[in-house]
Image (cartoon, rainbow, N blue to C red):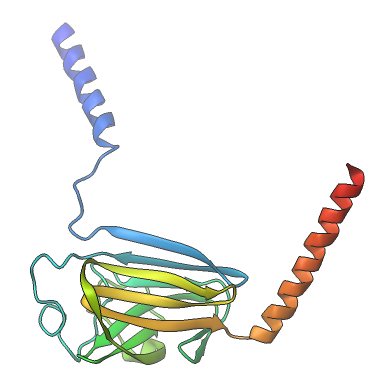
Length: 201
């Protein structure tokens, strides 16, 4: 009986310990969330590694749609309507796909953001696509990476890079004049609140 109790306790302890760990992912999942204008942009994607392979033109064929990462498709969520590389996109969540060529990438936002890879990709579900130049990096980017780089308080760039290639899509509010007016009003409200707090103290 003591041996049985000991075995059960040991199993329970091992199970509890194992719940805090998992097998390392070949292509780790990453979630990027950043303030953009008056809301946020969130990106959820898989990060494959180069691992000595030839990437663009071989592992990722030219002229074919690619999931922009690994495993399930890359998801991008806009908290407000945006100007995506010159084209207006409504607030919401989209699948992000790329059709690469040697000198340009077509970056696509698609209504279906819940598919695995690009195996069921349907171009009829595309919302917008923009074609951007590809720049050669000075240093190799081992792990696929998507980042958001602000250029000012109301705009920025979606930066995609892997291996020796990098491309950027410019992001701005869909209605910049309205955003500036709302921002000014919010700043006025904050100043009134601050002044009121000083008066009380």
